[in-house]
Picture 1: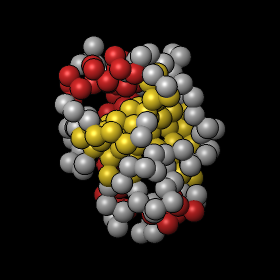
Picture 2: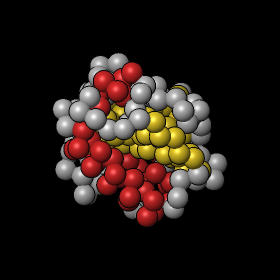
Picture 3: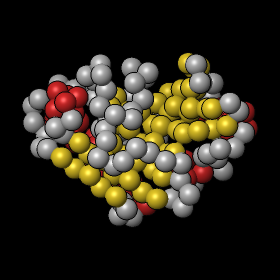
Amino acid sequence: DLSQDLFASLPLNASYSEALDILTGRFGTPQRWGNMDIFDTVVFDEVAQRQRLATIHTGNRLARAALVINVDSSSAGTVMDVFDRVKRRMIDKYGTPGDVYERGMATTSLAADVREGTFIRNYEWDLGGRYLRLALPRRLDGRLTVEVVTADSFPPIQENTWGLERIN
């Protein structure tokens, strides 16, 4: 049942077709891109920016799921406001993150700083056998996204190159 906690209840490594049936029942028909299904949805009510839930499968298994929030790259204040609102909600829900990595200060060149790796914000929670990460991952296209991803594992917390490039 996804009504209680979307990220903790997604059935990682379970049958992808079963997971997709559950998600389609809740969010409607997704858009398919290769090994991803993307749902336009709202997970965080307090965030006005576009939110999309992407599910990624390997074979017929749900490998990971990511909520991608598009933010205005031209305004560091807006980006960090959205990030902080999501972070507060996640701390309220999951408690203090088990692992945190922060580098740099938010400036007017935030998009370039993220792309160059001089600004990093990664917060990670261990949900007992799976992980949940909140971040501003580096994207080669220079766009900024706030991402909340659940998976069995991630690259080391200091790395910032694991985001979903294929979602514009």
